[in-house]
Image (cartoon, rainbow, N blue to C red; front, top):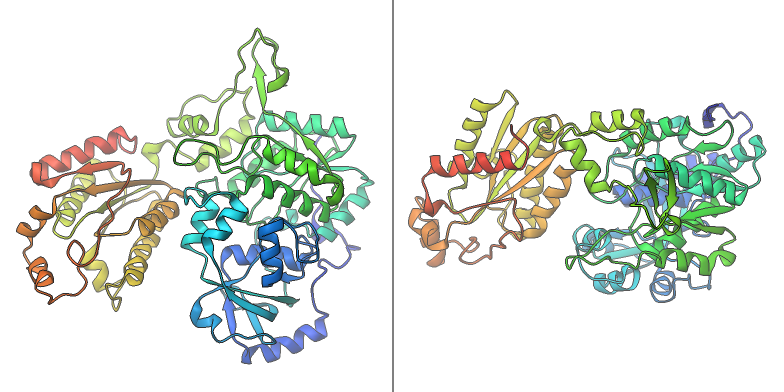
Length: 575
């Protein structure tokens, strides 16, 4: 028998879908006066947070945190009134906007299309200490942690706190039949006669080990199962949620009738390990669940630059268990599930027969098998799931990819980029787009200066175009000075969401670049005629671990280009 999906749109008697929304008449009045209010266009993370603030998923919060709550959460993992809450939920803004705001003001919060979603009644505004927040919440200031990187690179310098008046929940056009607010989900449980519900959190596709774990959790607790995957923001590089949701729908069919239910959670994860596990448990309590599965290294971001895990693998379970009574939800801790070939079944790793060798496939190995079109065994996953993953992740030589050539001015980037594009046109019938720095400055980035802020804007604009080329299976070749690691990393993250990324460091020495300088730019910079020039008055931050490094002083363009082609083949992007 197959578990079914109950659509929110078919529930005629569903109660109000949110707990923090204004009555329609009041909302209509605010829509009228909002034209005269200052407005903020929300980012993706802010949109996710706003939705859960408005629909009750973040109860007891009724708005973005004021400074007292924020400071208390950082220091004590509690709101200022003592209520357990582990994660800052904040609205960031730049200095220019923040300096126009004072307590008592109202701000219109809008989506990217300008639709009014909520009014923020300002309580306070303050400048933040990003390193302090990183250390307090994520126990690290290292930007290899995705949430710390987001904090440093994307979060603006001021937070604005205050209560929200909800006008409209963010609108979703996709998977509407799977999007339930907390009240809608509680109502669906009631309709089915479910009294005990164990929730399973995931940001990855589900395979047989996950299904086995969830079945055991349901049997252990005597509960029905809620599959509650995150479809807001997850870890950079994760499989996009459209593919994942199709995989979940396939897995849902493998459960017995009325055993499992699928609903999507519009959460922006922080990958905060132990604190995040407590946060997830509170959210599931708000959605009507009585039990919550916490696995090994729950919401952990992996390893730091030293190759060590950011969090102890069982710290999340321990902290969640410590607070389960206060939250009002029972934590169900589980270890990793591994497969026995001899017995053709799964065991938790702590109960695996000592005389056997456990079988498992890591996420890295799975991606490698997909990229190389290798076999993926049926004991690991379901054929329908693998088919979906293969559609989304073709072999690497069939993927689009971007080559970002970075280096000092006159290092030879443009010459190499042009030669590389011509050789690739000879070798493949894929569409190839050449994005050269000088051409980009003329067309895409006209008017930008050479300040660090404008340089970063120029690089991310190029990254956006390259992402679109890559997403549609093309090859983008970008030749830019791109002097800052931060901006290059942002471009890498953008493009790796949709295809391959190759950072090509043209490591030509400065002395050689100056000799080659046909425009005399280095000479003008040293004489003071040019105030901002990379390599003279502005620094260049060399790549730390580029996929390819080339020194054009040691070979001619043809020789170097062939070396690049050879290395791209070794990376698997060309046959």
